[in-house]
Structures are given as C-alpha cells and as structure tokens.
Length: 323
Image 1: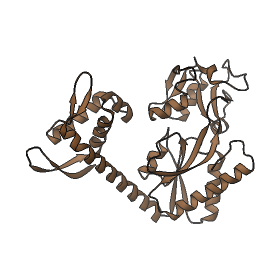
Image 2: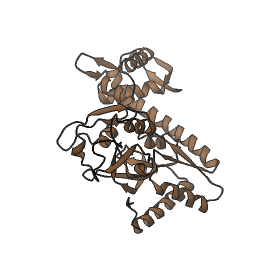
Image 3: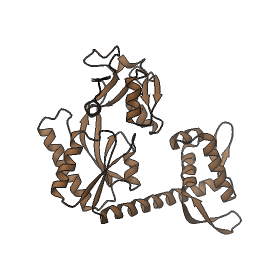
Image 4: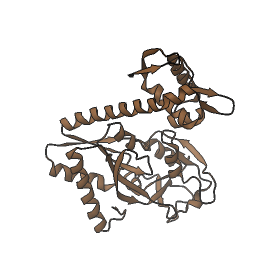
C-alpha cells in the first residue's frame, strides 16, 4: 500500500514519491527507540530485516535518515524533518482505514465485538444475547484477536467495540472497566503444586512459564509477573502463538501459565489443574471503543454491557465487575 506525499530534498528540488506505509512505520519505531534492536522487538521482525527496510527507505529518499555507530543510533537532520511527517501520514492512513471499515459495518448493521480467549467471561455471552433481544436485525460478529491485539484492532477499524485485557495501550480509545478476575496458574495435573488449594507467586520462581513473542513486551511481562517480588526474572519456557498451543505445552508438563479465572472455567481439561494466585493483582477487563466513534449501535452495546456488569456485581458474581 502507498501514500502519496511530497519530499523536499536539500537541493530544493520537489519530487513526487510513493512510500510504503510499512517503511514509515519501521522508520518511526527506530526513531522513537533510537535502537534497531529495540525497534525490531517492538515490531516483531528480525533486526536484519528491519535494517534492510530502513536502507530501502533511505534509497527512495536519496538521503540517510539515521547516523549509525557501534554504540548508538541518532537521527540525521533529514530524519528529524521526516519524523513528524511520517507520524502524520501514519495517523491519517490509520484513521482512513478505520473510518472505511467502520462505515462498511455500520451500513450492514453489524457490530464487530473484539476479544481474546475468554473475553469477559460470562458477561460477553450475556451481552450478546441481551443486545440481540434489544436490537433485532443487528448482527453481532465476534472477532477474536490473540495476545493483546484487541486495542490495535479498534484503532485499525477491525472491531467496533472490544473487551480489552488491561494493562494495554489504550491511546485513542474510550473505555470502562467492566470486570475483574483473579489470575490463576495452570499446570499439568501431575505437577508437584497441584495439590495446593492456592499457589503463591513465590512458589513459581523456578517454574518455566509460557510466553509469546507475538504480544507487546510490557503485556508479556505483566502476565509473567516480571520482575517477581524478590526482583528476579521468571524462567522463560516454550513460546506459543495462541491459547491452544499454550495449554498443550502446559498439559505436557513443559511449563506453567498464568491466566484469568474465566480461562480456568472455559478451558477445563482432565490433564490440567488451575489454582488461584492470591498474592498478585487481578486482571481488569475493560470494554473499549474508538474515542472518535459516533455509532449509535456501539453506544447501545456499551449500555447493555454496563447494565449487565452492574447487575452481576449486585448479584455477588465471583469475578466482580466494577465501574
């Protein structure tokens, strides 16, 4: 995909260029991190691939945008000039994608609800049922995103509203916390901690923990409780791309996982055991939507979730929703 913009070179010549928005996104990441290593981790690409893309951008611009030494990375004057332009182009393009996709779903009377794994537990299903009752003729499309992808999906227009597991980057979104769930440790049924009623995070210091490179690193660290209360780093176990891979590795005894209470209920299997971890903070689940949204259907869905969450709290639901 390309975005047309004008680049004024240092000799005063005006050239018309088509620049891939991916190149601009890579440039912005390196410019903000001032490190190819950190930028590659943030973008989930290899460092050689990132370096190649930046060289392609510099070739198209006919000027370097970074000064690279063995110790650091800095912006050239051209790089400093390009950074605000690149940010603006990416913001405009993302907004255009979001508005286009949202307009299409609105015209079709569809509400796309983003979630990952178990979303907000029983609240998710209850909200879909009640919304369908109140809004006959409107289709609710569940859209699953793995490992912290719900917020980006909202910003990219791939969902109209979503249940977002916090902490997360919620910039550009409105949100309300609608549910709180205790975090649990999942382990093989034969695990030496399986007979305990509860498990302390300190009991897990030497246990390999499942993780994914597909999620933002702060998200991974929060779920792994990194650092641990004693300042130590978790023992990192096998990687996984989705919930099913994670649980298969856990059931095989290759590691443990830390997951929300609803996952323990919805992903029950005889070779797994789930135990509460009472000495770490719980998961907060928010209902989120783009702050620019003017959709009456989104507003109606938010109101349904809000009302149901309050009712669950009043009924003393075990995983307490909060406002």
